[in-house]
Image (tube, rainbow, N blue to C red; front, side, top):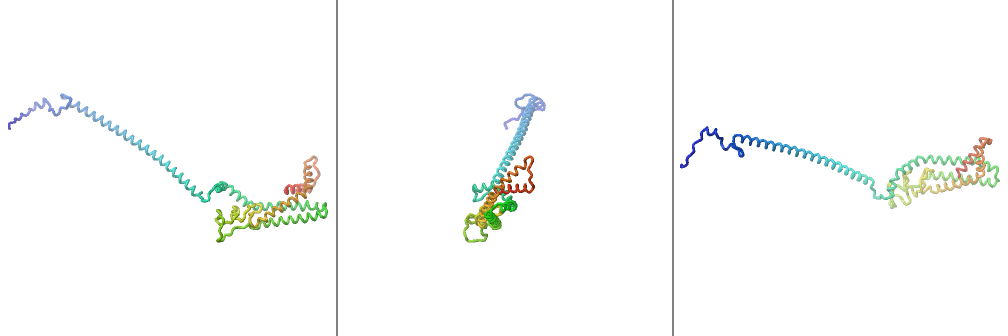
Length: 306
C-alpha cells in the first residue's frame, strides 16, 4: 500500500518499440540483432574450423610419432636380437672349445688337425702299399745280384774273394729279412688297460687312460705306444719299446747291404753306363736284347743302392 502500479502498456506500444531485453549491445535499431547473430555464428564456425584443424594436426602428429616409435622399437629389437645371438654363439663356441689344459700347443694342434687327419688316413691306407714296395724293391735288387753280379764274381774273382762275397752277402741278406719281419710282426708295446694302484704320470687326452713316461698316442693306430719313436709307413707299424731294436737293426743291415752292392758293382756300373751312352750314336752299336737288359739292370741296381 502506498505504492502505485503503472498501467500496462498498450499493444500498439509493443509494436512500436521492441523490448529492451531483445536488443543486443553494440547495435541499435532493427538490423542490429541479425548482424550480431551472424558475427556470432561466423566466430563459432571459425572456432569450429580451427578446432577441427587442430584435431587433424594433432592426430597426424600422433600418427607420425607412433610410426617413429614403432620404427625405433623395431630397430632396437633387431639390434637387441643380433646382440643376443652374438653372445649366445660366443658362449657356445667357448663352451665347446673350453678345456682346462688349453694352451698354445693345444691351439696349434687344433689348427693343424685337418692336416694331421689327412696324413694319418693316407698313411694308414698306404701302409700295406709301402710294405709291398719294400718287398718288391728288395727282391729286384737280390734278383739282379744273383743274375748279373754273382756269375761275374764266380768267373773273375779269386777263391778267397768268392768265399767272402758268398758268406757276407748271404749273411747280410738273412739279417735284413729277419729284422724286417720281426719289426713288422712284433707289437710295439701298449700300456696296460687293467686298473692298477700305480700312480700314472699323465692321462692320455685321446683314449682317456693312464700312460707311463715316454708313452705317446699314435693317431694312426689309435692307441698309446710305450716309448714310441714314430709310426713307420715302411713297416706299417709303430716303432716302440719291443720292436725298436729290430727296426734299428733292419736300417743298419739295409745300409750295409746297399754299400756292399754299390761298391761291388762300381766297375760294372761304369761299363754299363758307357755302353748305354752309345745307344744313341749313329749308327747304333749292335747290342742284343740281353746285353741291353744287363746294362740297364746294373744301372738300376747302382742308382737304387746309392
